[in-house]
Amino acid sequence: SQKIEQNSEALNIQEGKTATLTCNYTNYSPAYLQWYRQDPGRGPVFLLLIRENEKEKRKERLKVTFDTTLKQSLFHITASQPADSATYLCALDPPPGNLIFGKGTKLSVKP
Amino acid sequence: KAGVTQTPRYLIKTRGQQVTLSCSPISGHRSVSWYQQTPGQGLQFLFEYFSETQRNKGNFPGRFSGRQFSNSRSEMNVSTLELGDSALYLCASTLWASRAGANVLTFGAGSRLTVL
Image 1 (tube, rainbow over the protein chains, first blue to last red):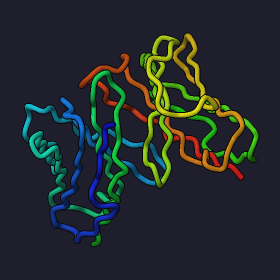
Image 2: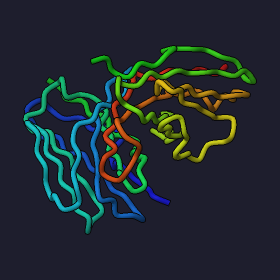
Image 3: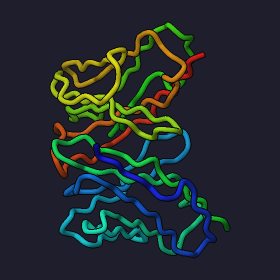
Image 4: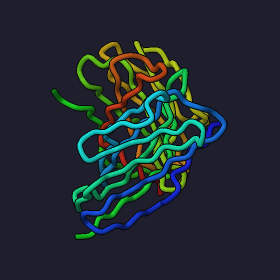
């Protein structure tokens, strides 16, 4: 069955640094991969979607890469701020549909 | 426009009881998906409804069921509650039924169920 892993349960970094989160998957090569942000007591919020033929995608301070050979996606937050502290989830988007989520990485950005 | 609304936000039940959770999707969205979130297992897909029909179902026992009404509102029910059913139950809506590459979900805030 499909397996998706986010390597770190938690990541602590200093404000202003770049946070890099990793998402690995096995057994299947999805055409799409998504990243969500979840704050305590709230549902996940969609951030970015990347297609397999898009090696990199950017949105403001966010950057996502997708390496289908390594079966890995990297999620970067540049110039991180304390307000970026949250849990970040990656999700595979395989046919026929219904997303498969990783367990998430809890990011803490210290001032 | 209003987001996805889930009720109740918090509830406490005892083992053996049953519970019904409600979800109102974004206006115009016709697909509703349900996920269970626990610290150990993360987000796990329960089922998806589109136009009042269950389209997909995750690997959960038959105690977990759902339905969708003609106005796209959805309910999920868990019967004979077990301690392990304690979780955050999340509902998400999309405009259309799930298909590859088009499944950007808008989630509600969830219903936190505690089973004692």
